[in-house]
Image 1 (spheres, rainbow over the protein chains, first blue to last red):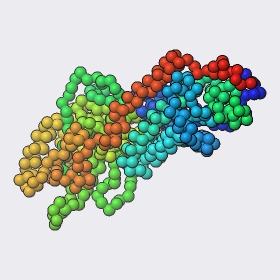
Image 2 (cartoon, chains in turn cyan, yellow):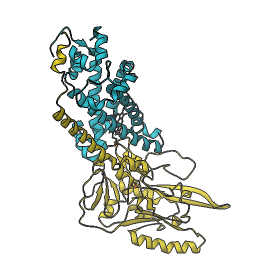
Image 3 (tube, rainbow over the protein chains, first blue to last red):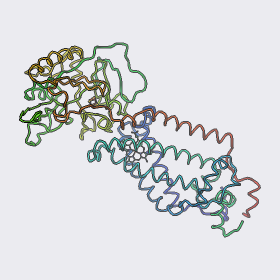
Image 4 (cartoon, helix red, strand yellow):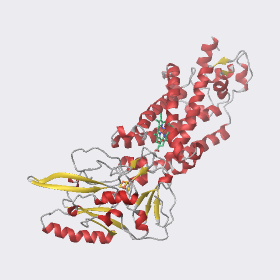
Length: 210
Length: 292
Ligand code: HEM
Ligand code: SF4
């Protein structure tokens, strides 16, 4: 992307660093979590130095993810309030996937889909932390009754799988929507991009009525 | 402990068959509670054969010593003073340890390939060199048997002396029991043996004497002969109808391979969406609408 003084600042350096810290933690925690999820994924343990290391590292990286995600939560919570417009936006998912944004209501800094993703991720991370502590045998499991450990194992596996599915979708939207990755990498987006995908935010940023 | 001379029927976290062209008869250890005098010779023999020494603990005012199974104590005598009928005191002593289930919850739960194995003869064994120390087997076991060692983060439990059995010996506890309360042989023989003893016990006033070979876990390869088979809970809370918890079955069930498939389908679906729809670029005519 050309460095154009007209570009709009979408994410500050701190926000970008925060996002990519969460992303790196997620990749590590997802790959190591899959090791325990199903035998087909067991070879992924080699990426971490074997099954024992995957078992040791996973929960600690999970805690780091939780901390980094927590910062993002505080920072972006207010921007992700779901409004009636967002609900309307969500009803147009099919058109969006066809690449036709004409009929969509104007999105703010984040659109309805991004906001929904945000809250689903908040739910997943909260569940993963709580259940992860309970199934963390080395330190915490002995503090909990067996039925709760069994429940937590199911919750952790389900929330982990859910989060992986959500992030796969998130990654794809980032790739498919040209230039949006640049926003998270370099912080800036071009005006036509902002106007097309986030019209309400574009107006707010430019004071422009177009 | 690994012993290749025994034929492996099933291994944990493995979705293809294990080597299985041979089959050996199913074996079982029969523990006749009505003959046990609580001398703990079997506990000592277990420590001796497996070369294990537990820490010296503290007493809780009962004969239970140590108080619970540990990574060093693979079998523990549990002493219960109960009154099955009012005024009739009985001292029921149960040798606790792995039951070697036909359908083992530990094997089902374990995520590490080959860390839990089941031999054709029915013995369920841990291969510690494959164990990653997650403790999932502890979560899966319906009898609360496996113990995770703090020292090396591996799990341990009774092996039914798989190493001795492989070379034609009986387990160490069986060998040592002075009253003959622990017997070992093919499961068929052990059930036959038990049937004779049950007739005997019934004649002597134990109307509900019977075998504990719980069907919920497919039967076990350690079976008890109980004076009160209708009330297993009298024997230091032996579970009445144990089975793999529905939670564990859900956790380890068919949903997982299906979810794994779904991950793949999301990725493939996204790729084809990209191919069919092309990238979502800002169209040329929209570029003009904004002064840059
Ligand atoms: C928030 C902090 C987290 C903690 C404390 C935690 C802890 C754990 C623990 C203790 C285990 C068992 C294996 C082991 O002992 O290492 C586990 C398994 C797993 N974790 Fe996490 N985890 C966390 C976050 C996550 C996240 C964010 C994901 C998202 C992908 C995830 C996905 C998984 C999966 C898929 C498994 C295997 C579950 C199974 O099927 O048994 N975890 N986690
Ligand atoms: S009793 Fe528990 S530890 Fe033993 S084989 Fe069965 S499930 Fe595994």
